[in-house]
Length: 193
Image (cartoon, rainbow, N blue to C red; front, side, top):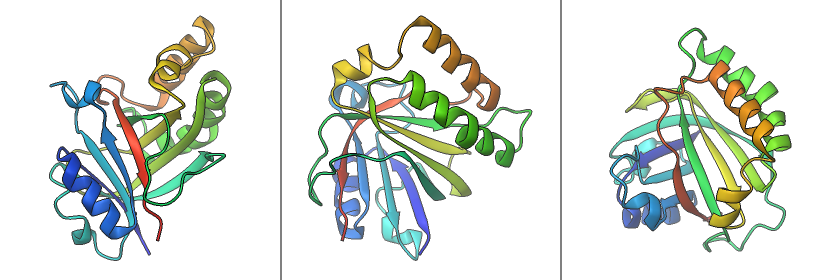
């Protein structure tokens, strides 16, 4: 069954759609939800035969994706409960000099190991690579970087100044940092059936 990701702004609707489809809901926390400069406030990822099953949570965009688990969550919570901590969700647009396939390969093969090395507080990491933009902004992927707490996200995102520089330079080599939107800080609720 194909996997779809949808983005929107209605947290209650996104949570209901994720529960109904057995998907995962990423819902902006108050800090992100109140900002005017975030590109979306919800992301739902679900395995559904037809993306219309995600209607209501898709007011901004719909994407057919494949999910790569780079660092699995060591102790997943029970289905239907909210994971501890927070998830920084980054929408990614590829560097204009690269094809989607080139940017995606770099993201997977070069950036992922670098992120695991330098993002010392990250306890769970997934990449949702976009296979098809059904409708909405032209994202190439969504990075899901989970941390035990908001403090860990703020204070342990990098292993130091050198890590910040290394990650920044690498991201700029495969992503359009000017066109890729600001991160959205979310909670995560996994609704496995």
